[in-house]
Amino acid sequence: MLNIQPSIIKNIAISASPFLISLPFTVLDVNKFEKDNDKALWQPPGYVFGIVWPLLYISLFYMNYSILTNPKISEGLKKIIARDTLIESGLQGLWLYIFRFNEQVKGRTNNQYFFGMITLLSLLCFGVYRISILIKSEVRQYLYNYLPYFIWINFASILGYQLFMGITKKV
Image 1 (spheres, rainbow, N blue to C red):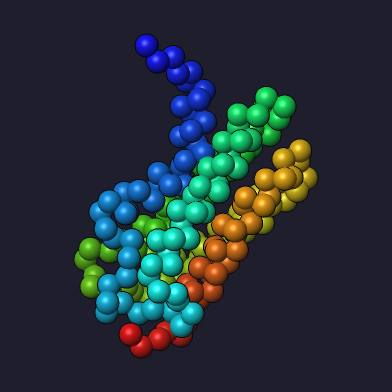
Image 2 (spheres, rainbow, N blue to C red):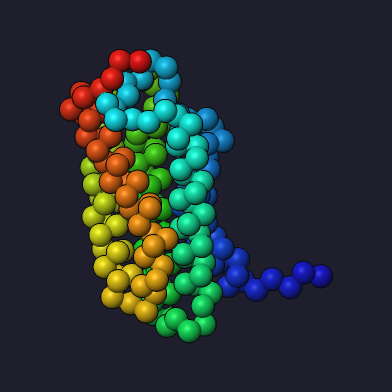
């Protein structure tokens, strides 16, 4: 019989939460642009997202799981990391819902662009907070696992701003 501790399952679930939040959008196939949707001026081809996001999820999983399972790291810091990971996953899921999911409207509305941009800016602010926690703590070395995600969210914020302001490219 397989003897799995509940804490291992909890640590895996928390560490994988950014991926798990995005999974329904991928399964329902609502996480891509339609041919007639506006595209931000600097938006890369669609296949780039299919390469970048899995790498970011792996990096975030490694960072979170390594911190949560390291016996040398204080329980207080582990609780902060777990809480922050879940909050950030929730913000990411909110952005996916606002920006990607709209069955009633063909295309996307300016309100979606606006609230998507606000959610991305919230993710950026939260990312600055998370970076400060990582820098000030005993897990500073894991900052390198978080920075690619933070940089990508910065880029996504620029794309969100371009869409909201109507700075788009013709497809």
